[in-house]
Image 1 (cartoon, rainbow, N blue to C red):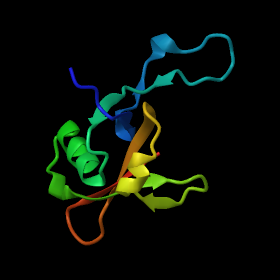
Image 2 (image 1 turned 60 degrees about the vertical axis):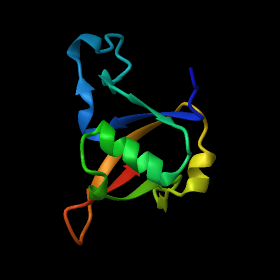
Image 3 (image 1 turned 180 degrees about the horizontal axis):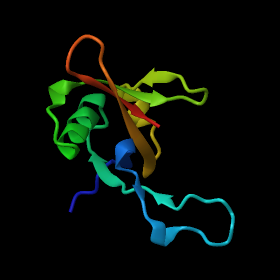
Length: 112
């Protein structure tokens, strides 16, 4: 059994689920919202591999994903590169947001 070099967990922002049975009843103001994450296993640690895996996971053609960005600490969008992926911590969690590209029917993915 081969272990992946990097595992990340992703959840699409539109897949947030609200479950009234998990509401907090102690008055702490928590929303009771939870996310369903998917494991993405990377072997090559490249932006191209991440793009391909995300396309497979969400059943869209890889050609429709134009760029992948990571939201930085001040809200800026940083282009995800091979080097950035190689520096992700194993088992990092991201919520994915999509933004329609201006030029065609493709999308940008933002890792939050």
